[in-house]
Length: 461
Ligand code: SF4
Image (cartoon, rainbow, N blue to C red):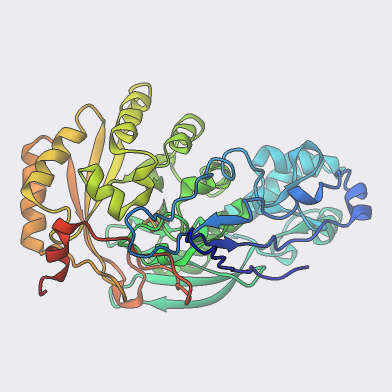
């Protein structure tokens, strides 16, 4: 098996072109075993993850036209197979074993039946993987299951997608969990305990992120790869397994960790579906929130295929500012994004989108911004979350002072908006919003600061 990813920066003179090159980490499944499993050996191209091998990364640092926005995000999200490849009947296969946590219940049931066992065995297995306070990680934890069934699982099923690497606890009780993936890459998951019993797990959906939001530490990493559905689901399973006793029930999931979830829309929808299954993890769909920076086609698909909640990271009230701080806006402008939401939410009953707005001093926190924001969200059933910016090393932005955030909040509330303030959590352990991951020496470019904001960024704190 090839291990790890290769990051390569290719520069062609004159054109300032560079690329991240990613090698698929998985090898082809064993043909003999596949035939035993009645699974078709997948073509090499569908084995391992199938995003394009190159993600455009401009080297033209400080050029406002040089955004790190993949031109082809559609091509490796909506239409590509998920990372685990598929055999006959759409059952996920990873090398010689099936990935249990990548399967929806109907897929698991089908596979169990194909192995000659009753559907009731599939339900018993499902409950031990996700429910009943077992959260099984291996066959030995499957009490009460038929011996032959367990033997078959030991041979042909993979239980784990993640290995625990470390846990860091912040002063406010927020916990950052580091997981190693099978190919040696590392992701981060955050547990946010809450006194009112509304404990939340914040899951990652990618290793790094291609979106290059200028205020985000993860964005500095660029994208290495998408996570599989199993790798996403298992973050929530681990969260319950590790911390349910200590912090109480974990009732909420937010897809706000490393990565742009809708860039990995196929696996994210699959993972969210598995998380809300009533006989399993049984999160309420309203308490599973998938966040996006504004990938419009994927956002539509998500709203059509999932009943989980949606958050849109807005962060600006003009295209000029959003083009700079969130380069995805150059592809999907504010108007298009908001009009799409207006139309899509019209046909959904009792559904509100959550707009997230990170407050950046002197950039997006003026009274005019607040008034524009009221106009922008007209006709969209929504709530607005104002988030205090969490500084990180190399960050050029500063947080808006608290009294100014409150003034901004009051203007929105007077304008008829439902608005909340989100306090910073876990920032002393780099576990707060926008602080996850570890950029290497090769980083996504900082874009040119528009003239009118240069003074604001250079102003003394
Ligand atoms: S804010 Fe989200 S979408 Fe933007 S770079 Fe960070 S992780 Fe990616």
